[in-house]
Image 1: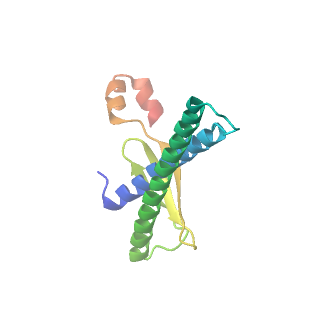
Image 2 (image 1 turned 120 degrees about the horizontal axis):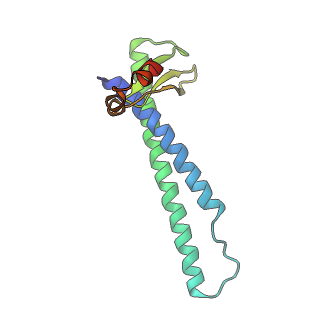
Image 3 (image 1 turned 45 degrees about the vertical axis):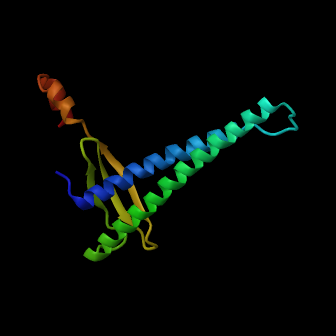
Length: 139
């Protein structure tokens, strides 16, 4: 069972992954944006407007995720400060049934997180429990 602090750290990991995906999506949309090059056909202008709205929506999603990431980072830093955990001390945690991670803060109060191991979900373990070879390989 994972507790409150592990929950914040897991959320931080998930948010970093989500933000990277959202930023990549935004950049792809931006790279493929329909330019205005003097079109006079209203349908063509509508297509440009639709494209721009899609880009704005993707940007807003990424900005909202970045805000949530900053708030989560702040909470993690407060917990680390409360316990007197010095900079660069690597803490380990788990995104339940998915992965193990290390998390630490540097001396400029930036939180860093790194996946250290993938985990096999429990439902998969139950399916594989009949196979002696697979269980030995996972240990």
